[in-house]
Amino acid sequence: MLGYLIGTVTEQYENQIILEVNGIGYEIFMSGKLPEFENTPKIYIYENIKEDIYDLYGFLTLQEKLLFKKLISVNGIGPKAAAGLMGLHGINLVSYIINADSAAITQVSGIGAKIANRLILELKDKLNEFELIEHIDIKDTVPDLITEAISALVALGYNKKEATKAVNAIYIYSDSVEEIIKKALGLLM
View 1: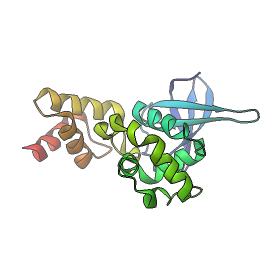
View 2: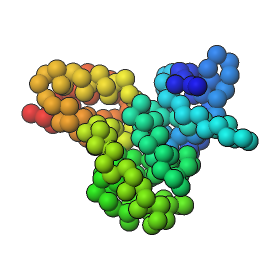
View 3: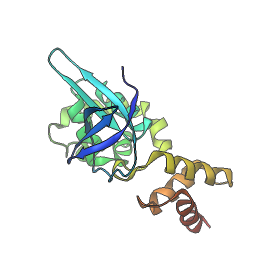
């Protein structure tokens, strides 16, 4: 089983990348709008292995991978539907499930009212850990920088939820850790 891969993104499409690791190109399906990868990203991997299928699904944070695994544990939600849910809704998906907003969930192709209600019923009480994380939207993530900035703000006395919201509000892909912390402090003060 693959936990994650670190390599160079050689090709990037709307919902997938080719990640080269030691001369091997892995085709990885991603959810949401992807950032421009400038270095060697760490991509957390979920392997979908069936009789005639071997697909890799990639995530920029471990929390996204864990949420994906919770979603596919629901009968009727496969990896493509779960990736679609995460790609369309990003950070809001957890609150839609916890607040039983089936109308928002059914916006994803292939997710009808019956599956949306099953998703809410089965996961509503199991996603509290994700509600507190409030991870950065999939489209704007560089986990090491974000984690470091949030940790620094927590060390300065801010609670994790406040720090995460501030970083999410100001983060620009090209920012350094120092720039992220300065901008977030400006918001928090």
